[in-house]
Length: 52
Image (spheres, rainbow, N blue to C red):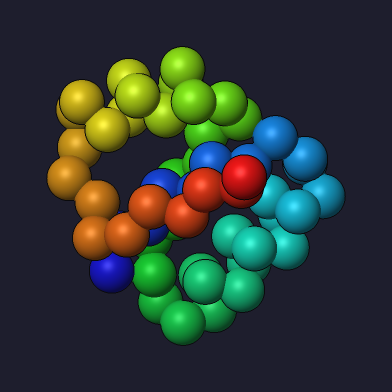
């Protein structure tokens, strides 16, 4: 599964990314919504995880 994680806290990015990668998922990270929009325009994701 290809995931996009939108998270601005570096420690949480690492933890969440590692968790999903352990299950053989491909995880891309965006620090903010602006960079997430660029990635969403270029790639198809199965799931987008967002920090509210």
